[in-house]
Image 1 (tube, rainbow, N blue to C red):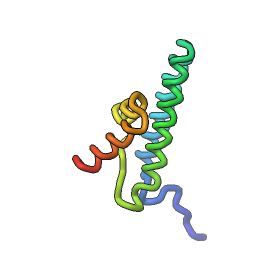
Image 2: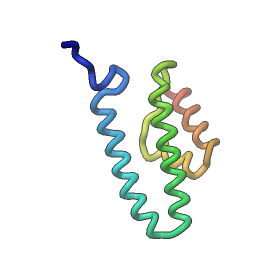
Image 3: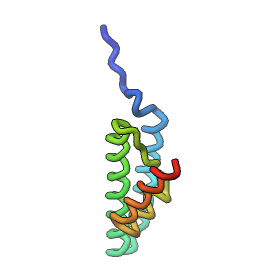
Image 4: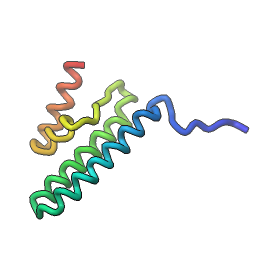
Length: 97
């Protein structure tokens, strides 16, 4: 019987665990921010969209040789600055690494 790999070479088990951990931390932060009212919910929604955008970029990025790390800085900067912040993080990652 042929063996079907669960994870391809693009995503190792460590990367999947890191994404799950980041989502769990985002969930904990969501609970904290939703108690603070409307402003917290808006900030949380933007952080969630930023995280989703980074995850989507990392799924497509290896096809062109590009990857953006998922860490607090790469999430918070676009959360506060919006699309220009996301482009800034992507450009800095491209130029520096």
